[in-house]
Length: 67
Image (cartoon, rainbow, N blue to C red; front, side, top):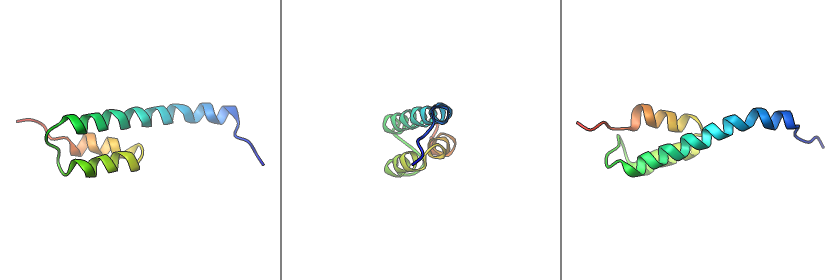
């Protein structure tokens, strides 16, 4: 059985960190904002289950600007 090399872990770690940071920031933003384009629960599911793309899609299309 082959083990995961240290180099591979070091290459993947920044991507995982970016994903987690985007996910946390997006969920905090969803919870704090009163209005989003669409149901909040749907955006939270999208952010959690559609890894890196989910938070990016929320920030582009899901946020509703005041005004």
